[in-house]
Image 1: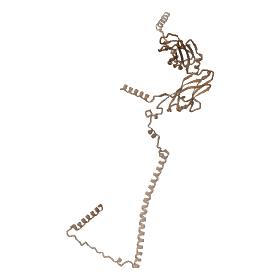
Image 2: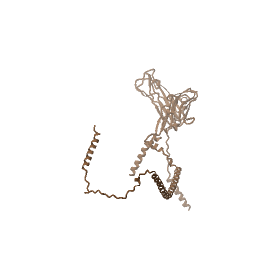
Image 3: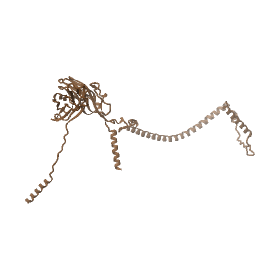
Image 4: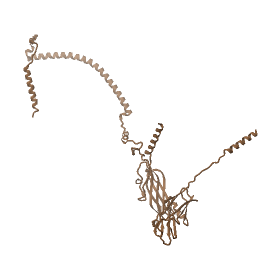
Length: 166
Length: 290
């Protein structure tokens, strides 16, 4: 009788091993931070040696919008250009300056980003502490040589906008 | 066959839902284009069944960072004290900036939206304000607005159905009273008829008897009166004697006999008659001659 019970138990164990299976869990994470180009920038040419996005200089400020669905999870990193991505051959040095400011907000509290932003080199970082949309405008100026005229041609530069998880 | 019917039903369903149930969505013009106060009846289209589903506003606050400033974008409640919509932006201790907001509201009916305004509380200024209302409505909310709407009723038919002619004689109590009176009248008429018949039969017998009595009396009275009158006239001698003469009772036989039993025509009379006819016609014609 004992032998028979052992035999049944062994058969059960063998059977359990035979039907074991791995189960997969799949998940998709959509970013809660979306970056959209609101306005494409245009360089104005107020003097032969200067290119500027400032409206006063005949330019158009590029504007980028950050949509954050969850507060305190992301920071915006915006880099104004320090080189042309496309230009005629340049024989002299180009001096780059720029600035990133908050242009529009969906919450009054976002206007404080201008005070809390961290700037180093050509990079501006802002902790996105309020859910909603924030429009950042980028000012970029390029001065060629020492009051030297830019060669004729098309000039392009790139503003880099990133959303970095905290 | 069944499949074809099914397709037809589906097509009809799709058509009806497209034709009649289509909501119209829209956005108003900038309500704050002329100032920080506006009248909603001039902003929202006056469409029955219209509801507002969101308010989108944008303005630039101009202020010193250290100043306190509250900005209220609001609409009064048209049917009660207070506001039907109010959004407040607190700029206190913050630099001024441009704010761009879209505030969803729970399909608030048009009749609740009172006049709107942007109110500044504290130190600061609002510039470049823009307030838009996103709305939706069913064009067939009032089926009478369009003959193509389901449930549309021709106004004339509707008017006719609304005019109900009430005959006062239809009243139950009045009808019962009329029936009762009618029965009473019938009973009275029957009774009168019976009485009339009874009286008629009675009167006839009385009349006959009375007539007979009156006849006897009259005859005797007349005879007496005539005798008295005759005696009086005779006494006066005014009646001629011939009155008293007795005419012999003689029979006068017919003595004239028509010999041949034939009555000849009178030709002369005929001629005269013809001449008279001619003269008559001449006279008649003469009155038409000019």
